[in-house]
Length: 180
Image 1: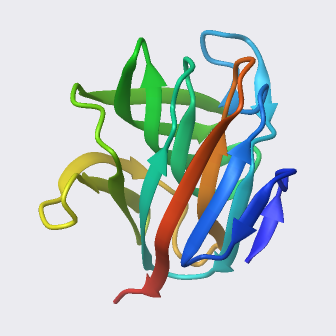
Image 2 (image 1 turned 180 degrees about the vertical axis):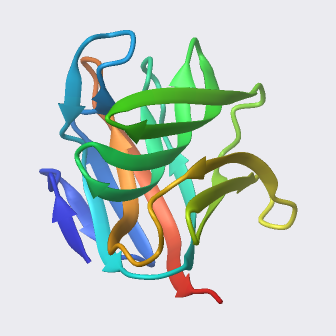
């Protein structure tokens, strides 16, 4: 695995990765805010074909838009990120789909869970995002277009802190496996 925007402070590997997310980092393109950001830490591997990626995420979210999860990416204008995003004092299961411009969808988690499990399935011309609070029952969050499996993609762990405060996040048991 390699870094895109390597953070100053991190330790571990795909089995257990802990990092400090620096402030003023984000992934977003244009919609509503009019800015483009492509500078959050992203620890990824490259894969071609259909796959399923899973991870457990736990963070100390304290400031608006603190976020951590999974990202599948082709380039700065084509990517999908999903995970926990902290909005108005509540963790939200979040997905941002970007094809030139970004969109955003959220589901509130009023109990602010200690951790979240994510599953991202890339198959044919789509990505399916699911989440779980117990690693047993997964709920579909989003199904979105993503260029067909013949295109090599980056898949990995992503985080961002768009505001003025850093935060700590831990990713555990990141796995990617080919699917038929």
